[in-house]
Image (cartoon, rainbow, N blue to C red; front, side, top):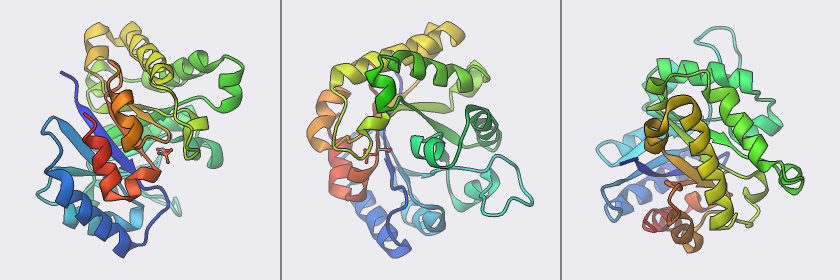
Length: 251
Ligand code: PGA
């Protein structure tokens, strides 16, 4: 049985004290969520140590939103995998469309980051997804397949056990415009097929694939009912504990 996960990507939101309060509220409600559903929160770097303290002993795991593409040294402004581990992270998000779009994150750089994250003992939530132009041109299948291959085909089946994929159509992120369950499912199925071609059907079946893009309590149930959708990567709705947990309760 593959793992079900609901992860909250706080992006560049909340002060440290607001983030600590949010984490406390999530921990308080986490008991309502079934044992089979993993919860992860990804606050900004500055919050990690304080939020880790709040999460200690709870079922909520800590993730970073990004990591450096080098181990250590003269890389001003970057945060290394070792530092994230030391701060209490067990995961990092990588390749979010906002990083690809605004910070020039390329597939080549992502291969390096995924490699370092796995070597350093972090699980990876790798984001993929087409933008609006690509969807309107009917290229969404090709784009997502290519993104999956360009990064993940550089890794082994063993590595894949610590990688979760998040399908996030860029046109659905923060827009209130969710992909329909059918639209999401057909891409999730394609991602699983793409994994099967390289790693075999069994590994593909075991891989957790999350949906992201305006996911909220009111639409989570329909999305999570699809056979290839194993949870969500939640942006806006993860900033309210009630909504975040409400989404996890959709399982
Ligand atoms: P959203 O963001 O839920 O606010 O659309 C999702 C994400 O970008 O991870």
